[in-house]
Length: 93
Image (cartoon, rainbow, N blue to C red; front, side, top):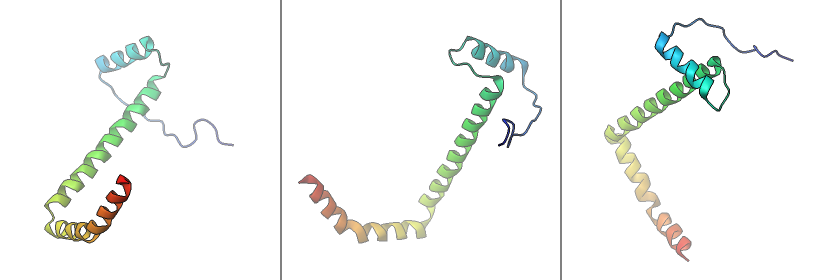
């Protein structure tokens, strides 16, 4: 059985004092009881998620400029147009 600290890394960070104090105050006054560590971990997870989403959005933006991709996408749409109409008609019944 692994201990609580398994798969964790301990790292020292420097935070702006006003930000740290604001976080401390939010944690102290909040209905949710969490540690500063938990707050930082959740914040980092949120930031990672946002950065991944931004990277994915950038990839989709590039796809919209790719003429070969657009041609292939249109071919696929054209190929499935008949079956799409069949499915729509079936669902309307």
